[in-house]
Length: 126
Image (cartoon, rainbow, N blue to C red):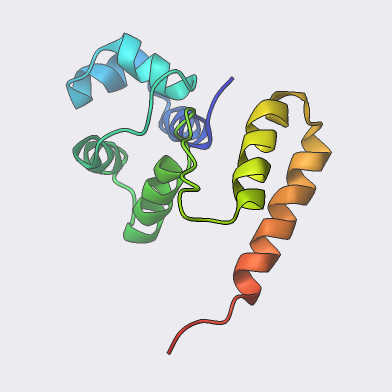
């Protein structure tokens, strides 16, 4: 399995026609580390690493911002802190944690859409 960040890096590598080994050497990391990132076996990379990736691929600012955003949502080991929230929030987070591996992709897409809509409809302070 991969993460959104792993997929984005693989796309950038394919677009540039560069191997993991060559990219790893240029960025000063091991090919094993780069492979683990691409395959979702490592957590979120450091900001320094992300800057090196953006520089290596010579991406424009908007594309770099998107790469950084994707990295933030790609940690395969998520922790949800429900301390101080109502009990149903904790129950929901734990239920999702227990069931996520068995959810069909369409259900995940629907849930993501519901969350996106709810976040977009929140009243912004100010």
